Amino acid sequence: MKIAVLRETADAEYRVAATPETIKKLIGLGAEVSVEAGAGVGANISDAAYGDAGARVADRGAILGDADLILGVQGPVAADLPGTKAGAMLAAILSPLADRARIDGYAAANLTALSMEFMPRISRAQSMDVLSSQSNLAGYKSVIDAAEAYGRAFPMMMTAAGTISAARVFVMGVGVAGLQAIATARRLGALVSATDVRSATKEQIESLGAKAIFVADVKGIEGEGSGGYATEMSDEYKAAQAELVSSHIAKQDVVITTALIPGRPAPRLITDAQIASMRPGSVIVDLAVESGGNVEGSRVGETAVVHGVKIIGHKNAAARLAADASALYSRNLFNLINAFWDKDAKTVAFPADDEIVIGIKLTEGGKIVHERLLAAPA
Ligand code: NAD
Image 1 (tube, protein in one colour):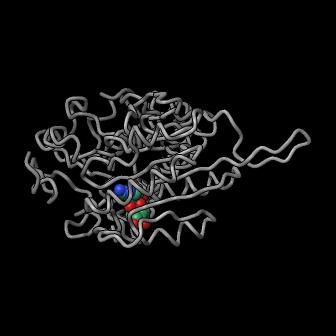
Image 2 (spheres, helix red, strand yellow):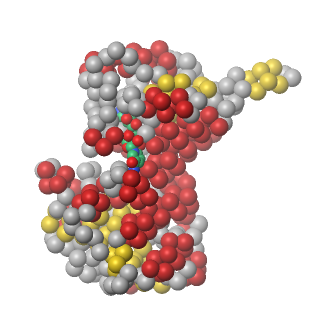
Image 3 (spheres, helix red, strand yellow):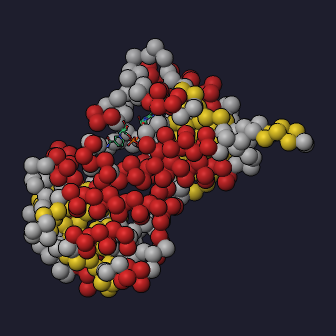
């Protein structure tokens, strides 16, 4: 099987879909790997390092023509994948719900598109779960970004010149990113509190040494939706949550928001009035900014200053740790390929009835085949 690794072209994308480590492993399976020249620049991987790992390094036109499987981080539009073979596979983070036209383009180009972020959240697929590997790094980086922008220290310090009090950090949304944000803020010595709509997270928050802030006695508190994801909450719940947040947030120095609802805009958790109640110099990091934002006034790719509070809205947070994010992402891809590798044929074979394949396959044979896309209007 011939595998081609793309150089990313999207704005603020510094990751790469294969590293010398995973290329050696793919070659070890019996694959031939080509890498687009310059693919690793953003993650500090040179073309020479790819060559030393056994890959052929060439320009895009030269690597696509005979590729059976194309690996990317973000999926390019089909027009940027000229000369691909009929039925060639493309595995990347394809944002199918946000950009349906691009997926229709893959079908029209007869590409078999595999959407890594649709990986089912089941034990067997944990090592292939790109949302987890990337969110974990984003959660860590959000706290480092906040600490950098915050004009004070995080830990309590008792010095001869007096005592500095610990920063108060509030994490809203305790999925993979939120849990890592709590752990990172704790390691830096902050006093950490956190909230979520899923009551299952209460114990996780407390086990990390943070205080759980939860809306009590309101219908709809059990926000656990399918696959462990959050659902849209009732109006009664939203009102109770807003009241709780208002009283808590005024005492916080740093707020990290990570709340997402699959297939819907991010829930609005912090209003302008709540920002105004915070002390000037406080910092908010909105990790959901690209999904519509949890924070009023947050802007993609910018740091806004509102009522003296810095609201950080970095684009593509995980790509800000490109080397580690690439290492984990490329292992996720390798684990997918390895799990379905046919040793005799030296190729990947995806059975149509496998739960993972059903979860990630969007297009095949010139058609959309994924039930979530078939159910949604084109
Ligand atoms: P996510 O990125 O979809 O959302 C982040 C968090 O925001 C979630 O905890 C969600 O409950 C929370 N949220 C949504 N609306 C909110 C609101 N209005 N107020 C406060 N918080 C709100 O979440 P994720 O990190 O992708 O995790 C989703 C689920 O998947 C979790 O149950 C997690 O344990 C599970 N998971 C399973 C696996 C696996 O089994 N392989 C791997 C990773 C995560």
